[in-house]
Amino acid sequence: MKEQRLNQTTVGRFIDPTTDFGFKKIFGSYPNRNLLIAFLNEVFRGRKKIVELTYNKNEHPGDTEEIGGVIFDLTCTASNGEQFIIEVQRSAQVNLKRRMLYYGSKLISDQAPKGKRKDWDYGISEVYVIVLMDGFPMPGDDDDDRYLHDICLCNRDTGKVFYDHLGFIYLELINFVKEESELGTDLDGWLYVLKNMSRLDKIPVYLRKPIFERLFDIAEYSKLTKEEKDMYDTSLKRKWDNKAILDYAVNEALKEERAKAHAEKLKSALEFKKMGMPVADIAKGLGLPVEEVEKL
Image (tube, rainbow, N blue to C red):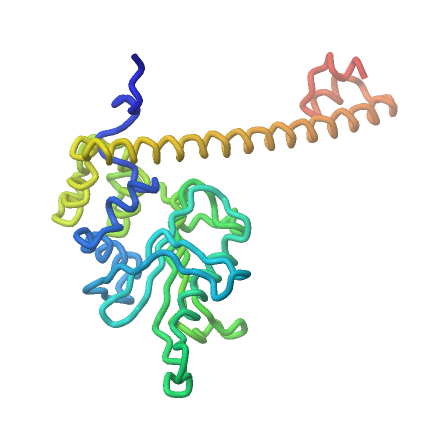
């Protein structure tokens, strides 16, 4: 009888933190808040020091029936009032930047009191959206090999920061290519773990620190309950299925591009042939088989 659970040869020793279940298991519960605090402090690279977090509801209804609500992967508030949205995106999204801007704006608009607006005086707390991008590049930045994009509002002419309390940090895992021997900071360690944990069978030497040892202990597949294993298996299969669909779409697009390029070569070859150029020269110049040019 075929087992319902995924085979241990396909499920690694540690869970994949970029799956729905894996992300929430590691970062999404109050007892594990120190992991999220450590991760966020590294993401902000010393610009911010978070000492405590409170987890918030992740569902924010719209103000009216016509205005749809949003469900965030994870939201939390620091002890000084800073609010964070942490999102995991596993495939290229339409209007990703606009959607993240809407998410941040939603947290801002929700801070407005129902009454006494004058007394409130727009006392907006800081809001940050952290986007973990797994397997696809930043839209519009295909030629940029940076893996951390730290965005805020600035003056277009001077580059001077105009407003620093609404920020967006995009972590582009596809561009993080450091090997274990190249890890030099704890931020490197976190990104390496997020990208590679499910393929590891032991804790890397560089990551033998209390916070990472705690992380790997929580993420060990064998320590999950039966119900958790079922949820993780489902989550992992969904990720694999989505990747297969994406890979198929990319391959089909590449085939179409190659077919168009080949058709253009044949068109050029035919023109050169009409001009009386030797078939061998045409084939060599355009990278086509001689036989194919002869048939034109």
